[in-house]
Image (cartoon, rainbow, N blue to C red; front, side, top):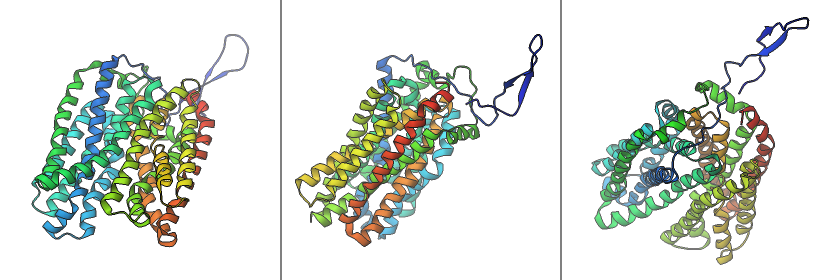
Length: 448
């Protein structure tokens, strides 16, 4: 973004008259670059989407498959619950620490090659878990899973933004992100089912080996000029440095407020992911397997909603680009209304139906916010920007949601705590409206 600087070049016009100041670009601001309109045939675009979606599915299956093996591992190695939990948290820790640095590498090194290498690392590490002979060996393998997965979501969404036209960004990115929710559920189901019949190691093999095949297919995209070209096409503008890209995002009110609003809505998502099974167990008196199944259906509803909301917002944005924020504002308001009403009812079919309907919007803003980033951030730094969004979501949303709700539950009970949580969606809705008011100005500043 070019802004007025205190440094000016004085030009003397012919004839009398004052000198004319010519503004020069500041060095700490990224030069805007216009989007390259993708030339990739539609069939090829959807092939790239298929690879990205399936890898995202396997990514989250690899994260969650170990959960189904907890009872077996606890007995096999005499593990405490804290050690069992660390097999999951070590992946999140690696992702949180390495997300932005590896996204910068992906932007510089090339997204296609970076994604292929990431997939090899996390898939091989997942399969290697089947060879572990001790807790320490499995923990090391799980750490490498996190290393491989750290920047994949950001790099994959950035790649899709480069091969799909802007009018399809919300749908493409939202559908891609929905794979995370489907994968989380499938990882537990596959790990439990396969492990029960073929031993706990089989789950790691089943999830890890397909990723290596998809990684090989991704390496083949390196020769596809239609995939590689859009990321490099920046209308002659040089690639900004990391400091310039961060400074540009920090000066954009729509990005800053949009990031915060999306993180607050993810707070609700993280809360329900963590506490819905407990809610159904305690309030409905269901067995743990039945409680988990009911909660899984709500998470699957969120996955479907991520795609559907992306498609809807894309259509609205064709008439008014502010719909990329106003659409999420409406989605967050609907989540607040439906879930707020649900958790004030007693247990029963109506309450569960409202929970399912409210869950549809839990991830519905992911695609639109990804589309906003694609529209405002230099194409060569999109992975970094999306990784920054992921960090915000994990800190504000996933990290705080389970903890804060647990503290509320200690005072109010689980039903009372979940009745309070939808208020966060109201805050998110207001934030999206505020961000929409500055979006057109930020688009003009970015030369769009």
